[in-house]
Length: 149
Ligand SMILES: [Zn+2]
Image 1 (tube, rainbow, N blue to C red):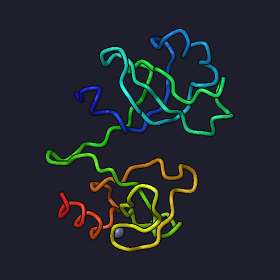
Image 2 (image 1 turned 180 degrees about the vertical axis):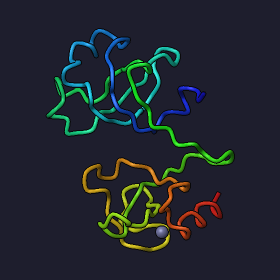
Image 3 (image 1 turned 90 degrees about the horizontal axis):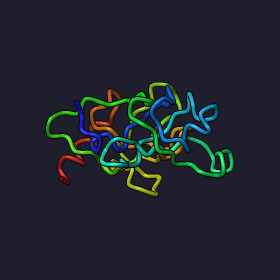
Image 4 (image 1 turned 60 degrees about the horizontal axis):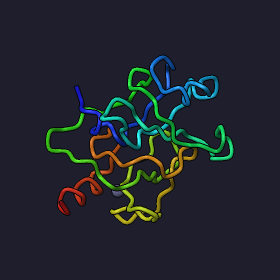
């Protein structure tokens, strides 16, 4: 079982609204089924702070980050290799096709570590982190990260 703080950065889907704080439950109709990213841990680890996907002006009251109980979330954890640390690189794609290679991109840039011109995911923008363990991770980018660490 992962500790809550290790889940920061994971993608999550809001699947239930049984245990979350009242102010979150008040907009359960809107939040249920939404996806987002765990951006923090609240109340000694009992709650996740979830940044919901979408534009701020679509959010109830313009609020994008909601405290959600872990039991109300389906968190997509990746099984990290023992020595793996979270990278600070964003995920960039070299093509828009389905089999596009995943490249590591430094924050706020559009050139990957290996020198390719890359694009964010069309739907999610630059919100995803590069995962060296991903199936289509660019070997050159992975190598450069490992060498730089
Ligand atoms: Zn690359």
